[in-house]
Length: 253
Image (cartoon, rainbow, N blue to C red; front, side, top):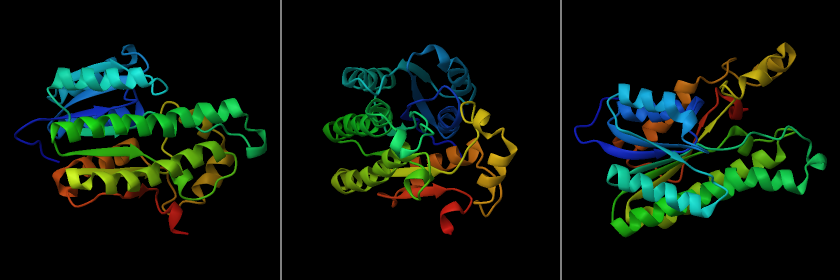
């Protein structure tokens, strides 16, 4: 993707490593200045350096998606530092509990949905409010999951939250289309990152997972980030309300 002549501005949540970091740096390569978040700004140092190397301005911010005041502050600071926002990437999330549904506690359920669904909704709402009030077209791209498209044992809270993200995408796309705000999602299959790789070291588990994937490999971080970059680009100007599966054919069965 070639850089645009006029730089735009994006906000990427959960951008200290993995898909979030690759997306933030990729957007900088595509002509964006980028605000990036984690619970605290400290872990964002490598991502900020990558954005600078790609020719973009970087704004590291602390963000807790469980706290509405933190969401509002992060959006306000991003807009103030970058002079506006055009794109939100809802990447931040917490992993699957790895428990059977009968073992999921109310506290664990609330912890997963508070970030993966509720926080994602209110982050999107805050950006939507800003874009509508500013009369500014824009795009919201959220991270869904194959867990939200097909059933998996031991991932009920996570999968239900991610299914909610996909449906939220449709609902917001319809409401915000009159304001020229596109809302889409990317649903990756298994993607080894710093947090996910340790769970994939068991050879038997890896084999079982790979056997479900027609392409017989896991996704690469850059492939998922590339899908997000596409949905943020002018080439996707007629796409809204869509969840793009990046899953090696997993959901084709």
